[in-house]
Image (cartoon, rainbow, N blue to C red):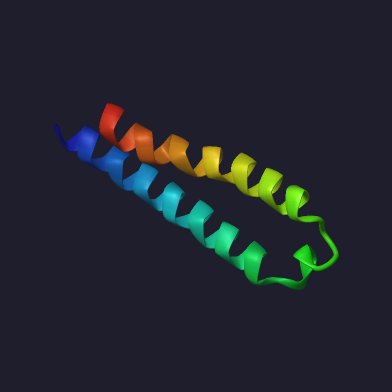
Length: 60
């Protein structure tokens, strides 16, 4: 069971890192000048990447 706990910690760490990257991107000047649809598209893409390790914490 120890391996499962270790994997969960890894996936939680990955999810936290991805979340922080999304927040940082939204708070940066890099989104200035982007259309609403472009920001939404990137959030959707990054959101799916964030959901993957969250789901994996429950699978593994």
